[in-house]
Image 1 (cartoon, rainbow, N blue to C red):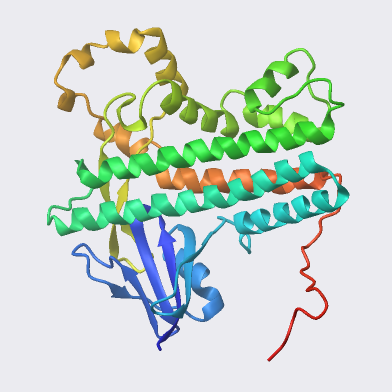
Image 2: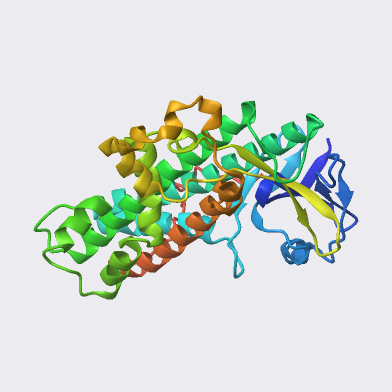
Length: 355
């Protein structure tokens, strides 16, 4: 039975690095034809720094360990700075908070912490799904034989990419609200029940926060703050229209990145609307439908090349947003009113045998 120990690093744009050992590491696709290209990795622990030194952005990594028939991916997103696995670690640590709450008899806190732990893992997996859809989009375009840098295009994979990012946005906002619910549970005196960012901000209009965590939440939720922008994207797809057709129709964009070794690597970009809040307001008010562009054929109403190139990239945005949510979760964990407790399984006497 063949035993595997493989790392597959997800790179922005749908690129991959496969790493078997020090002597077998390669980029896929490695050139404009889709052929893999060998790269040098100094040692096992330098994999991510060696990749970044090429000028590539790491999204996360799949670890495959076990027999070829049984190996499944153990996915972890990679923060842009620092060591460790921020989101994975927070998913674990919040489960420890839940265990502490359970042992302390605090059922409400146990429920909230369990949901936060689950949602961190869910959001982390959503980023992987989005990255996988990027790889499918890139491979599909390369196989078509018509890959040109800065070309806008639309095929069967494009819609799947936007469906994946929409799913991430919904799950990310669920995590946001769970974290708000935790904050309010440990900081309030129980006079009102708050379980979402919207209800919290409405409450703060009359009674602004004074504690550091509350002030920080208010800051990142204010107009232009990263949590506000996240909510705007979610509200656009829930209350107005799908991302890809909310404004000018969004096409995928083909690109070529120049590495530090002067080689060029193909990638794809799935642009996001630059101003989701404005789009939602225009659609809900009806102003959007007065746009003369909408009176033309649908394929004329597509995002302009310059706007597509400057717009946020879906995978980069999701990865960055997950990192911010995970850092926020780590900060709020400091407010836990119970001790963090690692679960310990103790077998009943006489029921456990070592053979």
